[in-house]
Structures are given as C-alpha cells and as structure tokens.
Image (cartoon, rainbow, N blue to C red; front, side):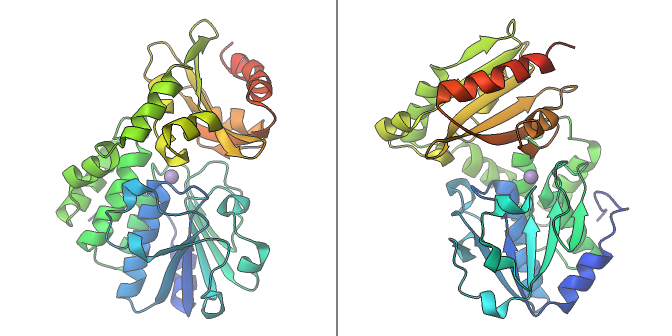
Length: 328
Ligand SMILES: [Mn+2]
C-alpha cells in the first residue's frame, strides 16, 4: 500500500498517541461522513493496538453513516462522561476549535491533536497535521494508519471509503487525482464495498427529504447574469415536511450542477436568529476566502459561515460579496 502523501510527517501524532492513556476522537458540529468515517477508522485502529478510545461529538451520527461498523460507538452531547479517563483528544476534519461545539472544560488539561484538511484551519491543537491538499480527512487517517503500521480491516476500509466518496462528491471534484483512485482501490482491496457505501449515501432518501428538496428547489434563483445560484430552506419548510437539517445534505449541488454557475449559495436555519450559509465554487474561485470575509471558513471549493438576521438580511449581506468574486 502506498501513502496518499508520503511526505506527511506523522511522528508527533504517533508519539502523542503512543503516550496516550485514554483517547477521545471528536469531529465538528453537524458531523459529515468524512468526520465520522475518520473517527470510526481511527477508533478501530487504536483499539487494535490496545488503546482506550471513545468517539464523542456534540451532534449525532448522520443517518447515511449509521451502517458503518462502529457508528453505534459514537456518544453525543456537551457532556462526555468518560472525560476523567481521557488525557488526549483527537480532532478530525474540524477547521476551528469552536466548530467542535464542546465546552472549554472538555479540553482542560488534555493534549489536543488536530488532524484536518481545511485550508482555514489555524492549528488550534498542541500537535497539528493540517494539509489542504488532502481530498478528505479520511485520506489523512489512511496515511496515519500506514505510518503506524496498522493493518486495515474491512471496517476501517469501509469508514475511510465513505469519507473519500463524500468529500470528493463521488470522485467529481478537482481534488480527485490518480492517487485518490489508488487509495480507493486499496480500500476496496481491504474490504470496503463501494455499492454498499453508494446505496447508503445516495440511495437512502426519505420521502420527507424529497419533499423538502422540492420546496428548496422552488426557491432557486440565478443572479449575477446566471453566474451565481441561490437556494434556501426555512424553519417552516422543516415543519411542513417533517424533514431536518441533515436532509439538506447535497441540496447545494443542484445549484453547482447548473451550466455557467460559478458560485452556489445555500442558506438554512442554524439556530434561533442565525443562518448557516454554504458556498460552492468552481475551479478558479476561492469560496474559502469569500467565507472567511464573513468570519467563516472551509476549502477553496466548499466553505461556509454563520450569519445573524432574517433570511432577507443575510441574503442582502452576502449578495454583493458573491458578485465581487464573479467580477474578475
Ligand atoms: Mn472533510
């Protein structure tokens, strides 16, 4: 097996994990398949070398990942009952400490290891491996396991595969290189099942989700001479369809798939009075930079921020900035 990026230096992470007596793996609020897949793969790996390890996040495992062997191990909420048994925290796929959503007391006196591929990551750990050239944090976990000499089991391979699948939008993004396919092949050889992952991620829609999608597509607007696509959902739509935040996963891709659209904006309720604004950009447009101008972050091609106000106020705030990114 060949490392995705052979030059990544895992020595400090290996040392910290080697020294650790108890480890908790965490990922960002509203976790996605990359965060969860990375956690599950590393969980199995650390178990295999005899470590005490837990998975804990603020929010639950998304439905599309619950088929993974190990997903049932994930705890959730602001309170982590095993905190006393833990001396090391590993943050996976999280661009900022605040995005973990855990209280300050969670981190007190612990060694924090930060493994991530978000360009906006500021290195908030005591040990950091941050590299935006990785297409997924799952690919980083693969390289870490390789450097630790841990053999991939089918459960680890399946977890990394779903991370890779979703963070590359099914191998559709410009981050997809020959090395990504080599990695995918290695995962399948180790027991990952692409058909099972695809069915879970893309073939498990609920009726509620499709009703919400229909309403959201009704909000689709093209601006900036058809260079930007905008769509949203509202709290009322959640109520009338009985769908939830998780069901909006992938809605933004409908905008991205329109010919000529260079930036897609998707807005959804975050919490009372706040909206989550997500951006997707084509090659050559850095929506990560755009989001950072609104105190958010992410990748060049996918990013987001949280803004206060009404939907109309938020839209008016974002619109001129989007236009300015389309002028050059
Ligand atoms: Mn990711």
